[in-house]
Every structure is written in C-alpha cells, then in structure tokens.
Length: 230
Length: 370
Image (cartoon, rainbow over all chains, first blue to last red; front, side, top):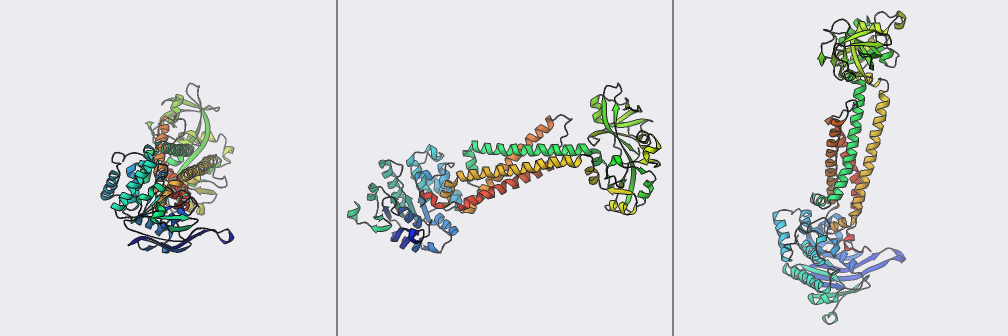
C-alpha cells in the first residue's frame, strides 16, 4: 500500500502577476519499504515538495495522503499530530535541540507522543545502539560529530514508529564517505522497519542506494529512468 | 515538563542569571515592604496594639488626636450608646524629656490613661501603671537605649515636672515617638497649664477609646453630638505624615512591580526569540504550540519560585542584620503575598512570549523558508 501519495500537487506563492509556482502538478507515490530520492538544484522546488509531503505546508491544489490521511482536510493542530505519529523527519545536522543529550533528543518525541515510559525509552536506547551510539547517549550535540548528530536524528525520526521517513539533505555538512555511510544506515533502517522513505538531496553519489529517483527542475517533478539516474 | 529541567541543567549560567535577577527583584520588593510595614508599625504601634473597636475625638479636628479636646463627662454619655461595652479616656501630648543625669533629650509621646483601663500596655519589666507609686510612669523600652533605667527620675523639659520610671513596655510607639504612659490626671497637669488652655472644658481629655459591637462607630456618630468617632484604621491614617509615608512607599512598590514585570517579560521574550529555531524544529517534529507554551510558562513559574525563595531568604537575613533603630517588619504572610504577585506578573510576561511561540513556523526546521 502506498504510504505517501501526492496527486497533481501545485504550490503557488503570492498572487496575481507576482505569483511564483514552486511546484507544478507533482505526482508521486511511495510504498512501505521503498526508498525514493528527489534530486534537483537549489530553487527547484525540492523544499516545497518536502514540506508538503511532510504535512508542514498545505498545497495550493492537488491531493496529499499520508498513510491514508488526507492532509488537505487537517488544521494546523491536526497536521502537527500527523507529523508526530506518521512522519519521521531527518533534518539537517544543525537541527538537534542544543540543550538535550542524545538520549533525550530521541526521548523528546516519546514525551510529545505521551510515550515517555519504560517501553518508549527502551526503544530509544535500542535505536541509538543499533546506530552505533551506545556510548554517546549522554552527550550533548556540541560534543558529537556531524555524522553522530545525523545518526541521532535518524533515531529521533524512527522512535515513534512513523510510516513515512523524510530526510532533508542528510549529507549536508558531511564529507562524502561519512555521507554515504549515514545514508546507508538510514536506508538500512528504513528497509528493516518497513517505512516509506523520501530523501531530498543534491548528492548524486547516494542514488545507488535508492529504489527510485525523481528529478525536480523548475517545479516539475519527473521520475528518472534507471539509466538516466546512474 | 520534559524540556525545562534539561534546559536548566544544560544552560546553568543563563538559568543562574535569570534566577539571580528575579531573586534581586524579589529581595528589593521584600525589603521595601518590610520597611513600609516597619514604618507603618512604628508610626502607629500603640494604636495597633490596643484592643479596640473605635476612637472618639472632638468634631472638626480632622481626626487629629493632638488637636482634640473633650470633657471627661462625655465618657458616661458614650458608654450609654447602644453597642458600647467599654470606654476609657486617652490624653495625648508630645514632649521632650531629660534623662536622670540630664545628658539625653528624648522626644516622646505622652499618653494619659486610666491606669485600670484597657489602653495602657502590660509592662515587660517593672510594675504596671496601676501598681506604680505616685508619679510613676511606664516608658517604652527604647528609652533604655538612652540609658534610662527603672527607678530613674526623668524630667519634662523645659517645664521641669518630674516623674519616676516604674516599668518598661515593649514596642509602644506613637507618631514614631516612644510612648510614656501616665495616669490621665498627671497628663492633664502637663497638657493644660491654665484653664484657658482647655478652652474652659472641665476635666479635659484628648479622646475616648471604645470597645463594642461592629457598628459602634456609626452609633456614636449618630447619637453623641460634638464628636467624631472612627475605627482604628481611621485613627492610624489620621496620624501626621502617615498617608504621605505610606503613599511614597506604596508608590515605590507599585513602580517596582511594574519595572519587575517589564524586566521579566522582556527577559523571557528575548530568550524565546533566541529559541525560535528550536521551537520550529520541535513543531516540525509534531509538538503542539500548547505543549511548548505550557513548558515555557512552567519554566518561568519555576524560575520565579526559586528566585522569590532566594529573595525571601536574603530579606530575612537582612532583617536580622538590620540595626534595631531601623523600623523593619517582614511578615511571612506579606512575603507569600508579594511572591504570588511576582509569580503572576512573571506568568503574564511569559504569556506574552507564548504568542511568539504560536507564530513560529515549523517550516523553519527545513531551514529555508521560501
């Protein structure tokens, strides 16, 4: 079953002659256990696409479904709730909370979801251990390397068992070897946990780890053939 | 409250500084209110101590005790008013006395009383006024700081009347001056040297102090001509300088609270602004505005609570270090009350910041708001 469905999604900023179309008639469908990359130059509409898929932004027109829920029918509170329950974000490395230790970066999601109990904390610990952070749990972000921070972000994205994982430039601020390693870890976890994964990136070297690749340019989203992708 | 304790633990310096600022503000509030209370107590301590339900003064003297003259025989008339249980005369005179060796001049309020009435205080040392020998008086214990002892002869200056200290009373002040209690007949001699001084009134007194039912003040005003009755509070407020003193201190307190609320509100607002990005991330991750706002208000309440507690401790330390001449009186009730006001003020300040949280766009987390 498709976890993320975008159908003819258009997003226009501004009105009248000054209107800018950031995304035009984009359609995509991602199944559980499937990993999709969205690549494109900056200003191509990647971020808009990710924001709409992540229930952060309502589209101007078109349909968005996350795990069967029609996002257009939700108010901002319900959108927050949907993000909490169904979507795991792997944001750029700077987006950990500075005053939380690695363990609490993950547990904050448990807290928000009302699951900051034994089982929730055990799941957080387990995820951190699987990501090789067993001995870094009590470290603050400032004490972690860029790669470790991204691994914490992966654990944070997965802890509440969402159906969809969205990664926003997960390799930014990382060298290519570490970047590859992180995305390998991310794709491995997404497959193991049977999530639908969407990774927005400009890093072409990661595409071999993906099931499908979409290219976006000037707000137009197209699926790339395997040949074009490699 | 998941974020607050962790944030406080991580940002110890910032937390410490906020707590310190709140503590200093609270300390200032407590000190000032302690001084205000001390001042107010000092001014009307004797009026506060007397168990009474009303004071009767001459009409049209603006309730000034020192200008009021009433004839003694009014006592029975007042006693016959419905609701009056007990009436006792009171004489008031401001004077200067010389200590026994003449080395100290002490300004004092002399109160002429019925030695068996309820106005005179119980002595903390020495004998009561009723048991004192002829010419014996009770003086406030602050006289002892000027070297006055029981058995000393003190002299009214410049007129030269002498009296003997028969005992000390504790904390008796009127108009900031220590009180001397003496029998009303003795007072009358000091106050009215010629019959003209009393305006022809026989056996004059300054006032009557009344005990009785709740409505006794109104009853006296309605039935007894030529007098004005008032409550204890009326009498305190009519003390010379009282309203001005209290008005000044209260004005300072009000401004202090205003400044405190502005300082705290802007502090919290700046901190909230600094955390805009974090709030964006948390919102993107699915946090509701309400959760974050509750956390902020909880954090502010906690910081204010700790700050006020430290302020209260500091104020109590100062209270014990304060020299006894400085009137300072801090009640736990007042500390709690003002702490509650500070808490409310801080929370209102924090609520202003929560509107900021509500406006944070979770799209910030994506890092590139378009």
